[in-house]
Picture 1: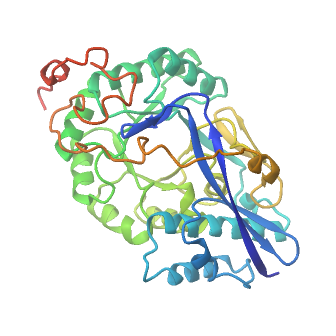
Picture 2 (picture 1 turned 90 degrees about the vertical axis):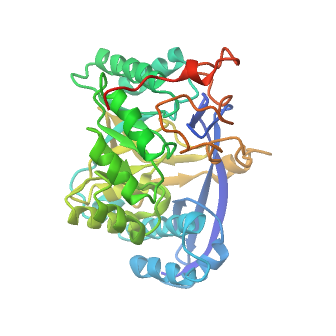
Length: 412
């Protein structure tokens, strides 16, 4: 079997609600999903979800190769991008191609990837993640009731802009999960790198007066090993991070500094990256938790590592034109028996999107706010993010002062 070519498509995820985080909101609830398909001379096609950036350069490392040499080809792709730097979107391109190669290898073996990788159980525990900062309280409760109906008993909310907003919203979701039968609902909060070290400790410390947080995610910048360690020491909740790191060299200082309790990896990092990161985390006796929408490759890989904790479930529906052989039952992903990833791309449906998909709104979560990280107290952010979240305290009164919005933090 030899690799003969690749194709790229970009589809969309239709959330049917505003989605975003502390950095911004996509009000129309539509986000883009890039797809990569790798073809072979025996008619098999592997599918990866991830970036197309510099794909011609990266693909040159694997063209004409046997895709079953996937781990060696992963390192070959890294070497081909050595001078340009294999970080960011280029790393995501490598991850997408890597996932497609694992798909091909498992298809050639006529086994689902989870079994091919050595997994024993097709069931992968999940938690709900609604990308929900743009929702008012009524819509927030409604969104998490849908997750609860599928058996999910843990939820991660987006927050970090105002401590009382976060407290109210976490308590609301806790009630939704409790009403669905959760004896002790699991609650997590994702700040998406919005805080300074001191602000993170103050904000989480104030929340922990009334909310039992399982973890706080990305409280400070992703590379701030000392800062993450300071937050780790200053709060009761576990610290989760890693989704935006690329390569083991970026995880190493965080692990050495004791700055992470839950090691996360993103779906776009690829299967090989996840397996290596999981092994590194296991050496530190730490659990791993994949994040991202439809992280199908990492779900399969999660069954084969000893330290998988839980995986993120964002939307219950796949992207337009994509189907996957998996179900959501009793609060978990249940993987199927289709050889490979079990992902199929219906190219006609994607091509039929017309002028959509489009580039992400520059006012969305991809743009870091100007004043992010430049606050000390647990306050509402007084900067260019003010009009991005309809639930933000003080938005109804544009004349509200910083003093009126500030949440007192004492006894810290």
